[in-house]
Image (spheres, rainbow, N blue to C red):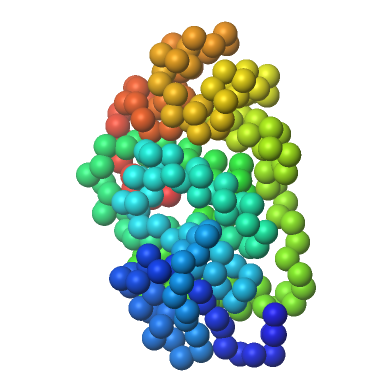
Length: 232
């Protein structure tokens, strides 16, 4: 990386063509933007930062279909600094039925289990500026990117076990049994409550709690009512 060059190169995924974020980046005089298909993330900034940008509506959709967990795993494994950039205002999704606790649980998993920082922005222009700020701060370090503390273990089975232990009431032994029964993290995350509770150590209450945390069932909250998504 040539740190003497004041300009910053941003590679943008071609599926971002119509986003206000891309338009804001293209309007910045100090930024060079190239649009192409990226394997991981929506933006690669200054050759060292991979950004997955999500509107809040898409965040909820990606929690429901499990896409968020696959994207977080890909970000954590890409070898560069990375972040999940959440864009929009909370009121945009207040009408959605997903519980606030389910959203928080998913973001805790992304940030603490996969080690992917979660950053908020109000809109496309602020997203563009945040990416630029982040790139400048990374430039100031002027050293190769170190391995992220707290990232998932590199051995596949250990990494899968580590991820599943983020579910409520699931320790290492139970996580291993879940993997043995269902075969993959994705299969565990999408298994219905009826299938989960067939495994020794998971009763109806724990199965319902797991499905509630993942946002696929509407089990009663231990703290009361539905709970609106006011902030993250």
